[in-house]
Picture (tube, each protein chain N blue to C red):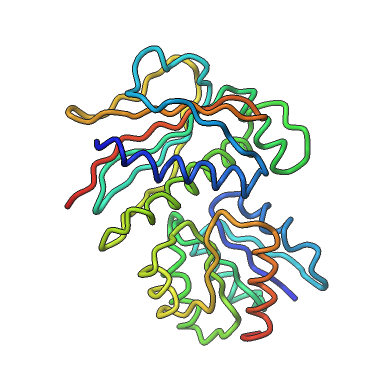
Length: 121
Length: 155
């Protein structure tokens, strides 16, 4: 399954991929902002998206709206420092399925991904 | 800046370093930043706060500490400041600011900007007039580093 990792930080993308590479049958795609993420969802049709919030060009929340606007139904997990309850609710209203707050451990990350794939995949 | 505003940032430094690196940093005494605090800072990551708060958060590292942080993060020996190190410490200040701002529980939430990195040893972080930087030195098994915060919360 293709997982699209969206974060403007090369280091955070690497942390996420390192955290998930033990999961079976995972293939990773990367995007450095929301605009690249929308394009990748259109052309690659990933089965899972992990989306940062604060990014240049197109923020994560706008990217989620755009992806849902294209009719895509894959699970989207926000992976962000935005920890306030209001932000979590807003992300869900915009089409995200789950939410992981940075910093996180590999176990936190794997649990979120497994849960999202079970419930929404 | 009220002195107690520094506490959420200190807690966030502890959380970020423990969660991402398995390191428990030891905190020194918070104080108003001055010229004596500038030694041993080769690379600093800064991020702005806006909306219900205005200010800046910085994590300042000697080169050796910055390299040790990234080496610990990925397990590969990092020997020079490269884009991975710059991205890495940017992400650390992003996580510290993000974790801390949630603890202020403002409505609406405080906004944070995109981080930036300053390199070189001959610079000072200067706050706007009437604002101050609070400086908190940390020691850790990866080396020393400094948290600096200048923030005003709007009521």
